[in-house]
Image (tube, rainbow, N blue to C red):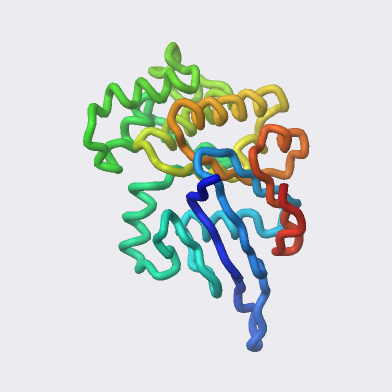
Length: 226
């Protein structure tokens, strides 16, 4: 199985005064398979989001290497990391963070303009909203959509510029069980249709059967891998 992203010996720590540090991640060695759904599971405070920030080049590790398709992310400067994220990464957050004065379509199309997407922006925005089942709702405002529909707009926005990998931080945490499962079904369909790799954090045990790969974190360490 081909891996799109790997880490070796990753440590993350934060100063807490008097020369001491809080170790948030310790000796993280993981492999993210290409075109699959990988879940990082664990309780709040286990290090899931800290690890995702490092994997997505939002933050630097204190120690260790993070390699994406042969490129060492920790060796990039801030400008290179910004370009890396713009060209390769999509984000889905627990809070959907849609722009309230824009329609669903406009939220997606705006991302394409920011990313300087070279193709037909209107066609791509409409295509992505149809992929997540919102073909009939794309011209509604966010406040006219349910929580699950808003999360689907956020997913459409994340895939619009055709990233190689999507990072989703607790994307189902604010949804009921049935709606959360609908979101997971969309993720699996996007992997099949778009060929994207998805990495998500969760503490929901009911979602684990859907994953292709699972890493269980406790106190900043990988304690189990499936």
